[in-house]
Amino acid sequence: MTMVMAVDQDKLARSILRHSDRTLRELARIRPWRPVADLLLCYALIAASFVLVAHAQALWASAIGFIVIGTRLYAVFIMGHDGLHKNLLVRRSYNDALTQIAIYAPMGMHVEDQRKSHLTHHWLLGTERDPDRYLHAAANKADFVRLFFFLSGLMTFPQTVAKVMHAKADGPPVRRAVSFVSSRKWAILAQAVIFGLIVWKLPWWYYLAFWIAPIYVHVFLANEIRAFCEHSQPVVPDSMADGQRLITYVPNVVERLLFAPTNINYHAEHHLWMYVPYYNLPKLHAFVADHPQIEVRRSYLAYLWRYSRKLPLEAAAPMSRQAV
Image (cartoon, rainbow, N blue to C red; front, top):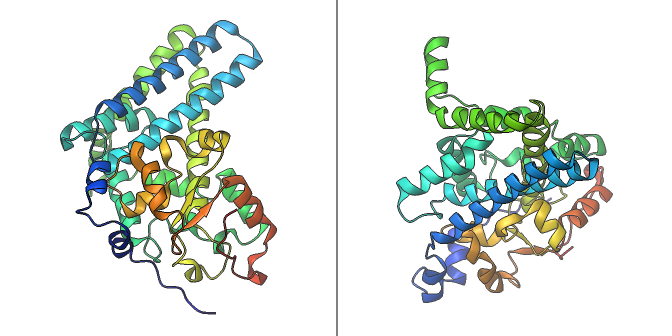
């Protein structure tokens, strides 16, 4: 088998659009009102869902509330992805404050830990040193059992929690605990406020059922599946796919809601021009749609189905680079 070398993303981006191109400069311009408006709308819908759940006291209301809360939290989380790239607000201190307080704190995360890991993923995509390679790899999802454990979150949840809860301090346990609490003061405060607002009108377990559970289902699971679909190929060994990990999606409205809010489906575009904010990524799609080094897929679920039909992968041949 021939090993495929990883794509030089900077070189590819420059060959498509030069940094000096007027179109690219305009697309990279940050409009601060847009993420603020999007965040306010998401949180307004989340608040309205809690009101619905509290007053309707019916199964249909709980189902609608769970989905709306989860998918809007996922949209908020994906906006945090732009915050990691300093694409939300022009001034970095304001950008990071908005990202930490309004986006990551409600989900118990810390912006700097997320930034280091995510930017490393950008730099090392298509190499064995990519910190997210366990998500994109096919070797650890090469049969139905391991694919099921991945899709359920059981395979990757411990590793994801370890990344989120990572503490940098050395020394005795007390010192590490103090450092951990200090670095996550906004997350701890946010959880206390959210819990207090929920138990003000609802039983305490609603915090678990309508905040923690939607985060697991609609943020953690959806994001793991999305990341897998947007960088994986059903071939082993994984080195064979390293030149084919720039993938973008143009899914239907339901899949956008569940897997790709705020234009994260334009993922190859984001990798090539990660300084372009999320609301301008669709305008870049025309430049890459027919490029031979970028694969365009039509559906996340269709790709998962096609992937599953090739299992077990030990006997599978490389997939052709056509859209699914």
